[in-house]
Image (cartoon, rainbow, N blue to C red; front, side, top):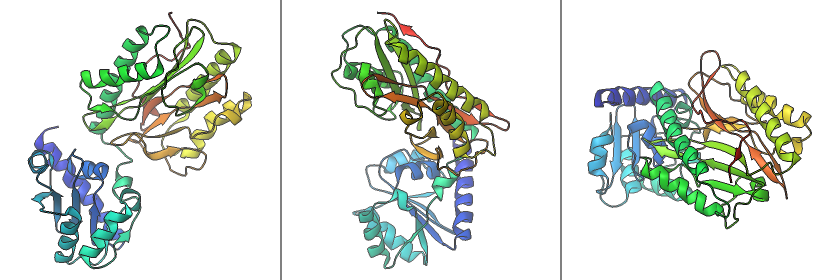
Length: 366
C-alpha cells in the first residue's frame, strides 16, 4: 500500500473512532496496545501510545522508535517523549483539556492505567470495544494480507510433512516450521507452533515435547505465521505410515463433515453461536460431543485471536469482511485427536476460503 493510501485509510479509521467516542460521551482516547496502535496508525513497533481528541491525533514514542514511526505512521503527529511515555501521555491529555478520556480495558494493564491517571489528574473511562470493534470488519487489503500469510504457512506445511521421518521429535518439527517461516519472509510464527504425535494429539493446545514419531501415529500440526503485520492460522491432522486405529478414521471423517457443514452455512446475518451449533450438533450426533470442548472459531488479523468468535455463547452477527477460523476437533484422552482448521472471510452471500491446503484423510509415507 502506498503512502497516500495509508494516509486515507488511517484518516478513515480515525474519523470512525472519533464518532464512536462521541456516541459514548467521551472526548479523548488513549492506547498503549501494539495491536490497536498498528491498526490506527500503521506502526509495527512494540512500544507507543496513541492519543486522540476531537482535534488532535498524536503518536508518542521514545527515541528507539522515532525513525521507524516517521516512516510508518500515517495521519498522526509523531512526538518523541523523554522519560515515561505514560507520564507524557497523561500530561498531554490534561493540556488538551480532555474531560472524559476513554481506554479499552482489555488492552491496558492496571499499572499503565494508574500512571496515566496520576499524570492526567483524574480517572479515565473504561470503554470496551472501540478500536477492537472497528477491527472486526477487514478491508480488502487486510484480507489479502491474511491470505498471503496463509499461503506462506501452507508452503511450509507442504515441505515439512514430506520430510517427516520415523523418530523425529515433536519439538524438532515445530522448530523446523518456525525456521522456515522466517526463512521465507515472515516475521515469525503468529503463535507457538503445535506439533503433536500419537496419544499426545489429544491435547488441544499441547506443547511439543520429546515424543518421537512412530508408524501408526496421528500427527497434528497447528501453526501460523505473521507476515506484513497480519497472522495466519491452520491445523491439519494426518496418519503416519498407517491408520492408527478405527477411531481415527471415524473421528476424522466426522470432524471433516462438521467443518464442511459450518463452512457451507456461513453467511452475513448468522450469529456466531448459530455457526458453532451446526458443527457441534454433527459431532454430538456422531457420539463425540463430550470430546469437542472449545469454540468453533475465532477472528484472525493483527492478532492471532481476536473478535469475532464462533462459540456457543457468541452473540456476534457476521458481516462481510469478517475473518474467522473454522476448527472443529475431537480429542480422545489416551488415544489421540483430530482437528481441521481453515480461515475464511465472510462475503456478501457466504464465505471465501483463505486457506487451500488439502484436507482429505492422508496417510503420510514412512
